Image 1 (cartoon, rainbow, N blue to C red):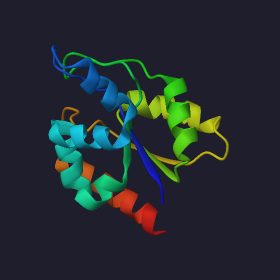
Image 2: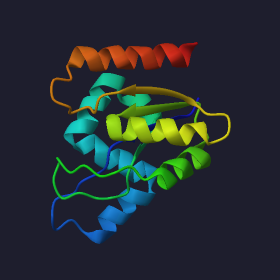
Image 3: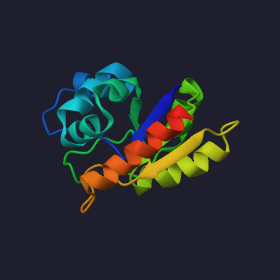
Image 4: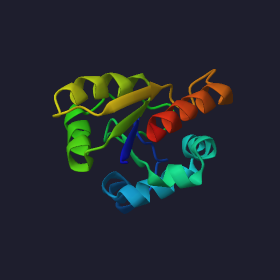
Length: 145
């Protein structure tokens, strides 16, 4: 079972080394480690559990790097298509409307089209732990079908 998840976009504080940013953008394992250290990643890891969290290929709908947590970039459909093509996931998770809308469009044009489950961004206002837990339950049910 291969799962790819798309968040909106990444952000790094001013002064972050270009090496660190480039490595984040191209290395799935490094991206997962960096994600675990931020608010979104911590919330997702708590909800999914570390074992499942570590099996998911985490990426962003945009390669644009913001300088603040509130940065919102437009989705990069070519990047999304490349991630889907390169990983051939069985399941795609999207977090936030930017990722959801772009993946819906791209997934229709990428061969068979993987199943897509979508929810709010992990740090969206008003997104409760109960709602996130419900989403994770849906993901686990889909995996076990």
